[in-house]
Length: 134
Image 1 (cartoon, rainbow, N blue to C red):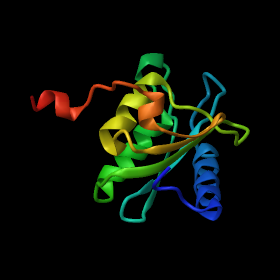
Image 2: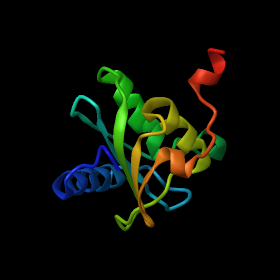
Image 3: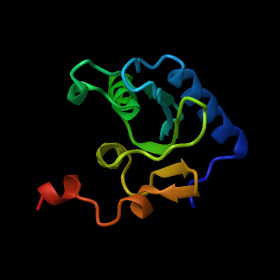
Image 4: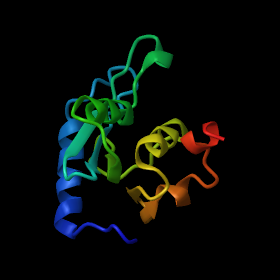
């Protein structure tokens, strides 16, 4: 992993993700989720899941995180953490892996229950913006 953060940085991301998770709106599933990521310029962005009575309109934590990324100046995500209601590491769902690919690319490092993995390892042969430019 060429862009590894120190343990203190990963812990700071975990803390931010847990704080975001504590603000999740999950009255239907009872499954709050929080996410935090480091941006290439050193910022940290976060998000939490927000459910809706029309389940298909619910937003994953990664959606809020990417919205904050764009609202605060954009950039590329470099490191990512997602946690459940107990503060334990989660992996993003397939939809969110695709969203993270758009804003972090294959080199984005994710903390997972299996350890640190790049998005390329979690989403091999991903479809992305480069495919549309051809």
